Image (cartoon, rainbow, N blue to C red; front, side, top):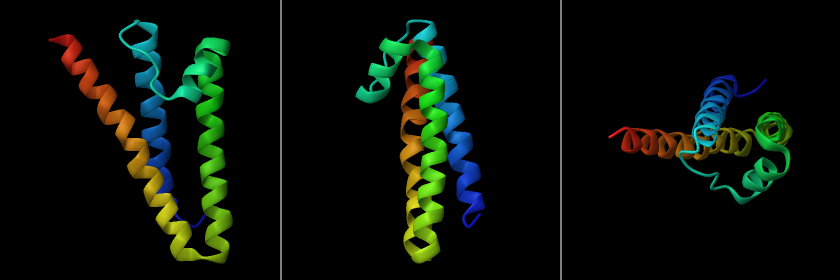
Length: 102
C-alpha cells in the first residue's frame, strides 16, 4: 500500500461519516444530502448505505493504488484529496448535531 497514512485518515473519516449519518438519519434529525446516497437510503435503508460507503472506501483505495503505480504524485494527490473531501460531511454533520443540541 502506497499511501498508508492517507488511507488511515480516509477510512477513519469515512467510518465517522457513516456513524454520524446513521445517527442523524436514525434519529430523524436530518436527511442525506448526497443524492446517490439518499437514493440508496430510500431504497435499501441503512444497510444499503453501509454497503455503499464501504464499497466507496475500497474503490477509492484501489483507484489510488492503480493510479499511484503509474504516477506516484497523482496517486498521492488523490489519496490526500479523498481525506479532505471526506472531512467535509463529518464537519457539517458535527455542526448539525451541535446546533440541534442547543
